[in-house]
Amino acid sequence: MVEEFLMAYLDRELGLWTRLRFKFHLLICSDCTNYLQEYKNTIALGNRLFNSPDEIAVNKVPDEILQAIINVVKTD
Image (cartoon, rainbow, N blue to C red):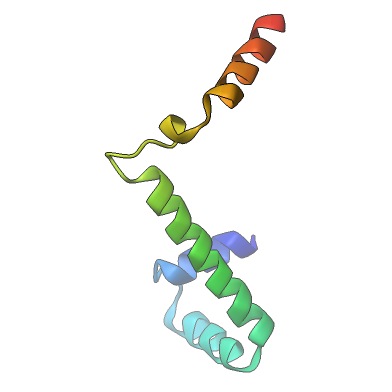
C-alpha cells in the first residue's frame, strides 16, 4: 500500500490536494522524507541494473553460484 502510494506520488498520478498534503507532511516528517529518498534510490538502482542493454545482471553472477543453482535444480 505504501509503495503504491509512493509510486503514484513519484509518477505524479495523485490529485493536486493529496500531493500538496503529502509534500507538507514531508516538510515536517524526516522519517518519511528519508524513506522516500531510499525508495527513490532503490528505483534508481533497479533501473541501472535491469535497464542497461549492454549489461545483463545474469552475466555478472559468478560461475560458482550459477553451478550451485544448476546442481540444486537437477536434484529436485
